[in-house]
Image (cartoon, rainbow, N blue to C red; front, side, top):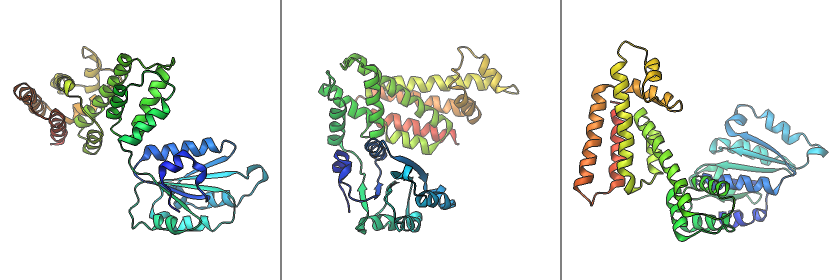
Length: 329
């Protein structure tokens, strides 16, 4: 049977069967379902497996299934990252006669997926698709989790929605930050804004490093989930310029010398957390490539001053992609 995820989220006990598949692109929602299941079954014994672990050797999980104990009657199995490769094993587990509960968690499964079809068509299985959140569902989550907080104004609500980009994992991180910081349960907007800005700056620092490292996959993933604040575009460019100029200074001194030692002695010093990325970047870049990158950041600054109608978000994203491509040239 197929269930609407919001109904299951309201009451996990509407699931009728002990064999349940949660699948979809909303990893944050899937994580929330795991927490709900564990809270609803605090006296249960949880056993957690990964698909690949089971496929390599099925003896372990089947020994747990067949080992019936009076002291361990309430077993719950979590099986992660399943896909069509797991269908035959899932059928074998399903054929075992016991009262244990089995929860399977998958990413996006296409309509033609045999595993998805098996769970959807079986009378003894339940299926919960976990699709992306929209603005309405995100607002409901915020209102529910901060229902006993004062100061939850429309401005705070909208800032949170923009910050998380409809990503439930990011949203939950921000909500936890708010709960831990505002222990008096009153949200002061000025302080709240600084908390979000700290996160934005941290996110851009990650994007800057992955781009300068030349990691296209992670850079693209971060760019797709990040909204750049228009008023902070010059700040972002300054961060890029500072790192490029610092790399230029170190590389110019490193010919025939120990790179790590030069980094340790440079003033102002490189923060210890930045050092691993800085070493990767210093090996990836040379003076010519850095000069090209600095010219690109300069041209972006000129365009920003000359044209007020530019899409600043697209402009900074293109600059980051250009720098990432340049790192690999």
